[in-house]
Length: 98
Image 1 (cartoon, rainbow, N blue to C red):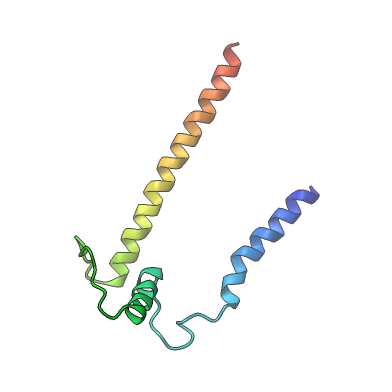
Image 2: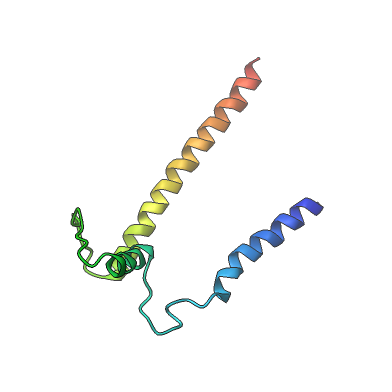
């Protein structure tokens, strides 16, 4: 019981702590992901840097890009959940037949 409470407080801390950092959005800059930040830093360090590849598909808006990212994460989580459930069920079933 004590261990569960400790894990609960750690999980709550990890969920809340990002809200206390000063983000670029609060400084008045556009909210962006790590890809845009890395690109900005590369351009600062190497002025003549050119991309190796161009994107195959460029979403028309940030909302559609977020939707596609969320859909990708949901599909991945569904596949992982199915595989983990399948393996757990197989292990339980194998133990029951012995």
